[in-house]
Length: 316
Image 1 (cartoon, rainbow, N blue to C red):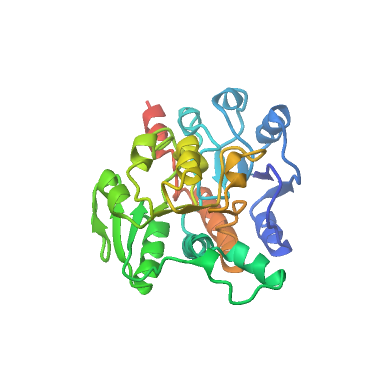
Image 2 (spheres, rainbow, N blue to C red; image 1 turned 90 degrees about the vertical axis):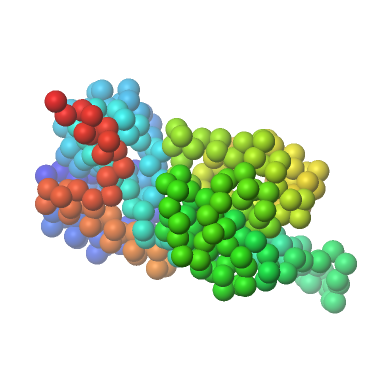
């Protein structure tokens, strides 16, 4: 069994390496390969661990040996899951390891933009004291917290919101109700919420989920928080709403364009570089979940498979 970590590991302690070596020949690459290099590495593996590298249908057509792709993260938009399924390759993700950490980051972003913490810190460092005018915040207790996507992270964020004394409403594709979350349809959530937080997976169905029309329903006093992929949101419209103060502010852990993004010029936006998940607890839990996924494949009882429907369709 040849196991290949295809690209630059964020965190790879010696203990993880030793555990992988117990399961087979283990090879690690500490860069982010181009397509040709990635195909070569994937072609030499039975099992691939992937963190950064897009795996397209074109690439999969050139790979014959590979039997399993273990994604390090929760998102699975790196891989063409349909093409992998057609090739008979299960793809797993790690959906559980960071739920609490991401939910906490939602509130880090919300509090930072609501209370203008960046500007407040800068003011104190300039020698200001008891400067009130620029820093009028919105009390969260009594407000409505709207959760788009009520999976693990959405539910964790809802519990924190309840602790702040907020009313929690939510929407999901399944239509299921959850304790402590009043289910509403998406347009109603956008209209009623004082805070909108987005927790949906990135895939073909959710691309551009929050359209110009839906974003325009938000209250002028509302805040928007996104710890999911930027591609779920019409970023041009979000920018226009924030620029014109048609919504109060936003906290964003991902943006669609890293260089020269117009959002960077706005003082009612707080940005973080994809670090919502990154805590000591989540980092260790990530590797445990990854190992459990790999072991489930090796034992013939795969778990957390994100392309099962396409695998089933490929069977005669």
